[in-house]
Amino acid sequence: MKNKYFILAISLLMAGAVFTGCENNKDTAKEEVEKANQEMINAQTQFEKEWQQFKSDAVLKIDANQKQIDDLKAAMKTTSTKFKAKYENQVLTLEQKNIELKKNLNNYKYAGKENWEEFKNNFNSEVDTVVVALNDIFKNKK
Image (cartoon, rainbow, N blue to C red):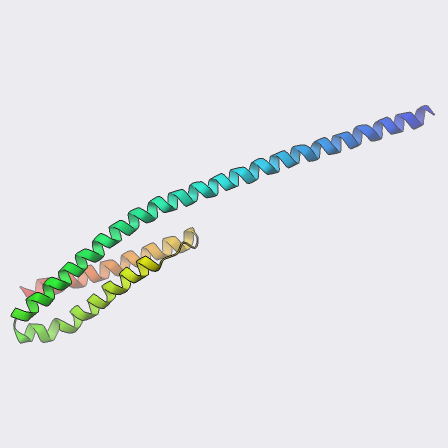
């Protein structure tokens, strides 16, 4: 009879330990989920700040490119036909590229950090290409 009570007491202690352990795991899991959610919110907030800064910088560059393009178009009206013939297609191509860059910027949707970094690098590279090409045409104009 004593064995029966002893086995019952041990069983109850073991069951209590298991349930207590599960409760601790549940609390730990809940804390980890809350921590992960907070990290995700922080990452999203960081991206939003970075995106706004990137977008405003990119718009400034695109607008500066467009101003140079407009200046070149105006200059072409008064320059020699040789210069006009040589650079008119390049200016129109650069203007189209500039419009495309603006459209890509406005259509971008965040799809993870890796894609964001790739987009940012490619976009900056394309903007730099347009800037260099415009500067080359301006140098040759003089």
